Length: 196
Image 1: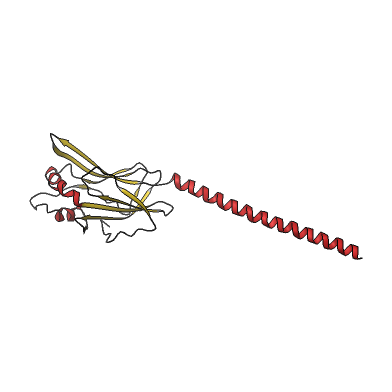
Image 2 (image 1 turned 180 degrees about the horizontal axis):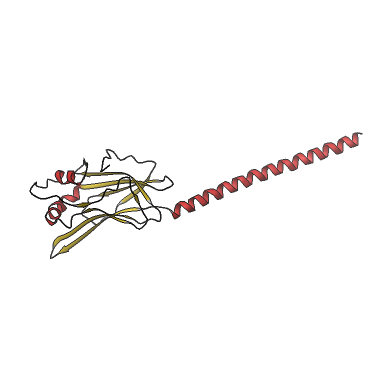
């Protein structure tokens, strides 16, 4: 009888050991699957990664400014969801472009008709170019505002379809300097009231 008990006990220990090994293999497989899912998610995020850029299109004829357009371009591969926009002039928050012109001390005698686009809350497709401000059709305003545009700064907070968030910042709207983009945890532009 004792030999039978030993055999039963050995078989039980062996089955327990096999079960324990199976448990470790299952846990290891689950870990590998989780890592593969993370890699696949990052690959999908990379395929749908937005990257906004602010550009200035200027043209001069005989040394005089004849065209001025502020552009926002999605150079990424995914849509950009614009969450918040803030524009300041000489450190003062502005509510719209006409407020910027007032802060820039544009005389009331100059008409302020412009071509503009509201981007807050919009989705900008990959490759899409939006004319945020176009002063080309108002030469007098364009030539009066342009020297003051160096004191106008713009911040745009945008996100991807996955909720990753970036803040685009451009200091001054006269030079051809590139915009600065940084990753942020969430949109938190101070006083963001721009064209809501």
